[in-house]
Length: 472
Image (cartoon, rainbow, N blue to C red; front, top):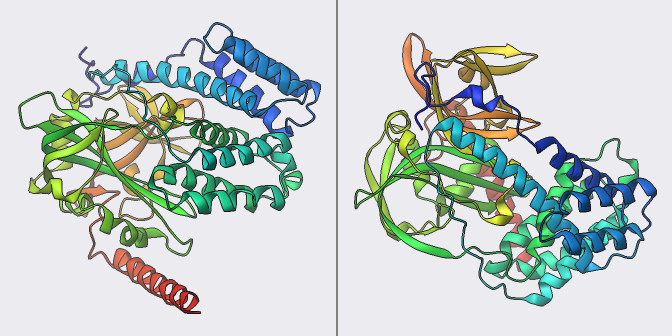
């Protein structure tokens, strides 16, 4: 399928505005369960029982039907065991997975790019079953007390579990999730005094963590190695008080002349809450040499680099070396339209996980109720400038003044939005490209240098204090 002309872009924004059948009903069932979880499942009220029944009804025509119906009945009676709560988490995850798939079908139609529909392979076995059981027990305690019932005693139950998990690389993914989740909950204790509960977010975190405690659910194995040229498009930075992740989105061109494909290479590290802004790169750089290539505008030559079925490169510096200069906008114009997307693992099928690289140009920037929009061939598309990181030179003002944009197409708050990764704009009558990851490999920019120095000082102080504590 070749997209209709969009003023030089490669996306049909009109298709993104069309309603998706069944989407509202699926999300309503998820919301009903989330409200039940807010009040807790120890002594459910009639409204909570109705929410549980709505969730069960939404999966009535699926293989989950019998197990979820039983779980909903037991939960409504205040007698749900751990297996029942896992079944409810699975039902909620399955519903959001169906929403993800429907939205991605529309994205594929709008971009006109081929997409790999082969399912990701089943994950491998998960070790340390006892630690998984301990994590599941804590999560079930959360579900029984509900978000309104949380207190520091309940939330602190995660600490020993996280401490025991962190030394094991196979459990670090779940440990990081539990650590961040517990920190959020602790900051909001006691739950009874909250003006507003972030129901969808906390239920998302609870459901994902609960399913990750099922042995074998985590850890998608490496399925292949790739050799060829990696052409970076941009960097997505995701920051939490206790962790930060940088994810490079790129087009990979196989050395054998095969079809280009979309891939990602990411790194996640723990962080103190005093390190913010451009200082984040100091924590990330040592673990991913690709960041230097991104800021220098270079490709990377890969040799036998491990890659998962979902297109995530398991980065190892020994399998990569800097290549020739590669302009991200040239990549977006020439290579991106024919790059094949990858399949998504079952547990990752969630609307919030949609992040598809797109290229737009020839649009008109404007405002709609205070939200920046790009009007593409007469159809407005919201721009999510809140996701532009402070760790780079890209600003909302530069995005608003741009004429071309590399971004990630996401779905949030009931609509598709574009998260800018880089823009082409005019500065002092000169055309320039500004990248969100422009400072990833280092910078001479005054603001970036100042932020990095502050981060260096903060990290040095923390290391000195940690050293003193260890010597005592």
